[in-house]
Image 1 (cartoon, rainbow, N blue to C red):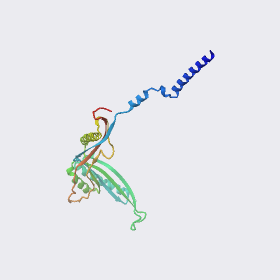
Image 2: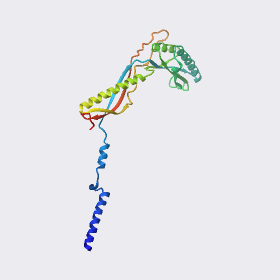
Image 3: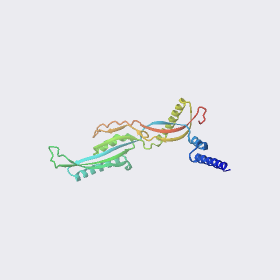
Image 4: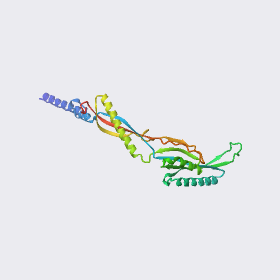
Length: 261
């Protein structure tokens, strides 16, 4: 019968249209829970991140200072020649005191032309030349710091900039500071976990904090004024070096029973 066939055709067409709409249009009646399962699996464990600091204090075994010669003359040739003569004498004196060549390094060498036309006693065209030569000196015998500096001044040095105390090899001190930093981070994490009713699990990541820590803080002398010709040497206090290391550690968090959430 034509009417029955027509109704059957319309019914089949309607079902087909609904199926296509469900697939292409995102009908909820065709969705599966696969997406929800993936979302749940992608959620990682709960974590806590803390920073622990380790500090060690050690005695220095090396001193570093900058010793130089500055000469002013009316000609650049004269200033350079005089500067070279005194620097050669300075280096020879330091070597005689037991400073090794590997511990002597030229820090800077500069030549300046200076016009003193603003001075009423000097003509506008008068030029003087200033030549400076600075040498960085490593002193390994800390008991002889005063002797080295006084001998350098006697040899003609007229620029001395600071004394910095260091460790020749800081490997052991850094290792100790890192160990203390790990212990401090673990203590911090345990305390925070206890306050929030959870437990600390395994370490997930660890890194050194680069910035204001990780180096030595030491006693230094920015300038020295020493007498020459048998005058009493300036007192120098070595003190201690303070090395601080910081580590950032991320721990997994467990519930109160020790299980993951």
